[in-house]
Image 1 (cartoon, rainbow, N blue to C red):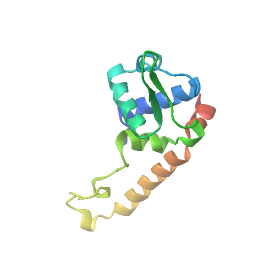
Image 2 (image 1 turned 90 degrees about the vertical axis):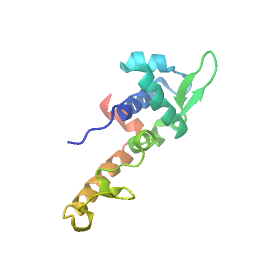
Image 3 (image 1 turned 135 degrees about the horizontal axis):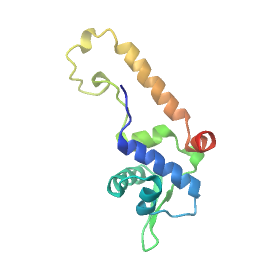
Length: 136
C-alpha cells in the first residue's frame, strides 16, 4: 500500500522538533539525529532539502545548525513533502511524459486522481502548529 519515504519522515520529525525548540534555538543535525533517533547522514540530506525550500534556515559557524525559517502556523505537511519529495504522484499517469501502457483507456484514472487530490488537500491543511497541538 502507500508509504511515505524515510526522508519525508525524517524531515517531518525534524521540522516539528525545531518548532518545539522555538525560533531562537539553533539545533545541529547531530542533536536532531540523536533526539529523534535517526541517521545523521540521512537527516542531513533532508535538512538540505528543507533549507533549499525555505522551510528551515541554516546558521553557519561554531554554534551553527538549523532553525525554522517560517512560523509553525505557516508550514504545512504538504510544504515539507514537496520540499523533500517533489510534487506528489500516486501513479505513473499523473506525471508528465506518462509511460503507462493503458493510460488512454484506464477506468480508474479519475478515482486515482481524486485520491491523490484528497491526500494532498489533507497534507496542505495540516500545519506544523496543528501537529504539535494535536499529536504531541
